[in-house]
Amino acid sequence: MEDILASIRRILSEDEASGAKAPASDDVLLLDPSMMVNETTKVTPPPEPVPAASAPEPAPEPAAPGPAQEHVAESPAGASGEAAAPEGLVAPDTAESAAVSVLGLIRALAADRATPVHRTGPTIEDLVREELRPLLKAWLDAHLPALVERLVRNEIERVVNRAVP
Image 1 (cartoon, rainbow, N blue to C red):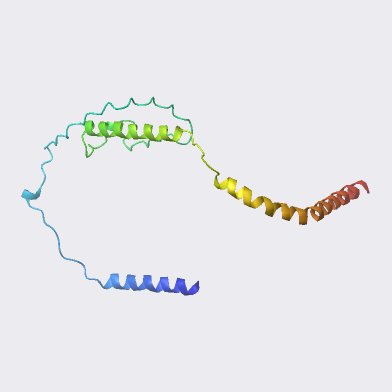
Image 2 (image 1 turned 90 degrees about the vertical axis):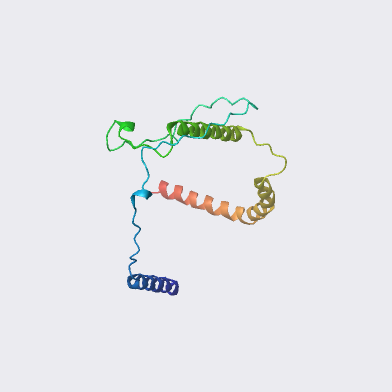
């Protein structure tokens, strides 16, 4: 164990020593006005795909109360919320579309989890019980009489000692 720790310490010290000796890079990327991005340019989101009408959407399940509730941290600006928040990377329509898609996935996952599991054969638990039953029986046959005798004797001694002042 000490050898491993010494090896790790040696490697870390070598890394620190080599990092200190490495010359600082003087390569600096300078931007000219042609490389600057126009911030007023708006990007139009791609058209939303039309959802297929293959199966009706399952009814949303009520949210279970508990620790799975979403906690929203308050921004430093206070209760103003979105007014102080910077504009996101995607358009509001795209964000809404993504949220609807994620909600559909969550509903599908909840529906999959709600389906009952059907057993077609013995489970691992059943196999373990079947294998342990003879071992447990043999152990109890060998140890139970002495165990019961010892526990009963200790309990009787405790009661007798309590009765005798």
